[in-house]
Length: 138
Image (cartoon, rainbow, N blue to C red; front, side, top):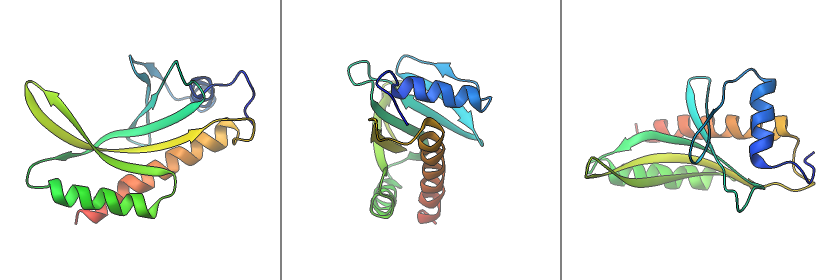
């Protein structure tokens, strides 16, 4: 169970340490690799109890694949309760680009799962959704 002092960041760091996974702190949060996937836990200093774990850039979207990627995102969003798939648009070298991100979000409170359960469930759900997204594109 979480306590008043636990934050999304502290729960994630404890989980990663307990599982021997190296964490890299970035400007936006905590980055780590697990089972060949690159995860990012967003850290919001104004909302430390908000848990947002993402699998960024699981698919690079082109003009030709935009509609298919959007439909695959919609399928994931209907199929999974706490996982969201979205098209993330950004600028790179002056060019507009987009990629698909998969995200798991939950508010932490005294009734939340313990760190191991929450993080383990989030990682499993994200990987499953990302793999399902890839299947939807076929």
